[in-house]
Image (cartoon, rainbow, N blue to C red):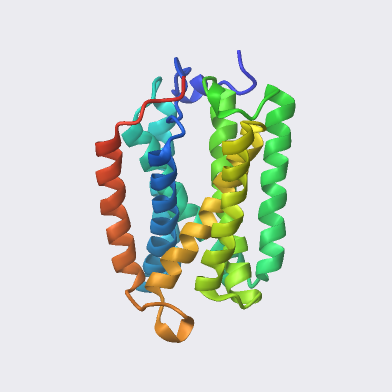
Length: 254
């Protein structure tokens, strides 16, 4: 029995790895979920009551994660639905810390980063690996999704930190995170070493990169954007994710 037995909650033991293969389509959909999550969160909290918006986001996140956890085998629809809802709710978590509680972006970035570090440390000490090639037990799956949520919150915080606190703006942040994400990608492409570290580094950086793109396209021109509107950005993102998820048919990691 693994460290966490989810069967007591009606969630069965996985019978295979439930993470998609890491291909170009994986990174493309991941970036889209980060952009969509940022735009959908901004649109919802400014269109309806922020408390209600966060509540709805939390319920959708819990429902999507439950569907993912209760499945014994990999399903690309369930997996990417869960990631998309993490994108929305993870953004809300980071925004609540700053907008709702008034905590500076620098502090929220440190807090979210520390949370992610604690999760990774606990995951490694209990399971002996952070590899996504072995998300096939209840405990590892729970650690995986907890870490995914933390990466979204952390990425949201550092994206806002660079764009707003450090005055790089959204376009400047796109350039910064675009350069940063190319480093682990290039290193692994050349050396084929430190796969787990390079994966999680790139995974974290997709969040501020995608969010910065969404903000740059969606926010008003006085704020440094193209003024397309977060609602429109979110809608296009949702449609693009649906098309890619059903078209790519990526397998799970073996």
